[in-house]
Image (cartoon, rainbow, N blue to C red; front, side, top):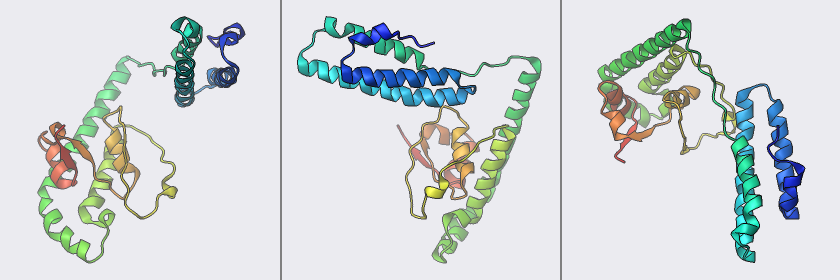
Length: 230
């Protein structure tokens, strides 16, 4: 149910009233979506629109010299809409079977990761002897032996963690180099990125991660990731 009544919109200037009505109409559609992932995706878009409306209104208020009392109702309405646009969280099941499955997935993931890191360390001379030769012969990074191994390592790690993912939009990427900027709320996200493409992007990560025995060494020396002291 929308937190904003039609009466609340009467305090909006006409241009902002139209924009707020559009946000509220879309918010009503969000409530009808069955998947909470889709609801959250829609909420992110509407949050952007709501905050843009807020900034535009504040700019106009400053330009017109409006006092806080004159803008309080509009700002209060925008704040109510913002509250409705908070992301939902998936309810966590705490049953015995779920807990056992969680530990099984965690154990499998760590086993794959530590084994792969150890293999990376044992085959480290290949990266510094064979790889330079292959590069001079025109072999691309994603076709180098250890990069191929690391791609499948990340795929197996994601599978062991019990995660399913879908990649969209790779067809828009050409063959030239790219720099990607990611936010990762989950510790699995770097592995998902590496498993999503065989081109094996090189990660830049915080120094503390690279100091973890075996795992950090594998990331730095075996996978060619770059450390950064923040």
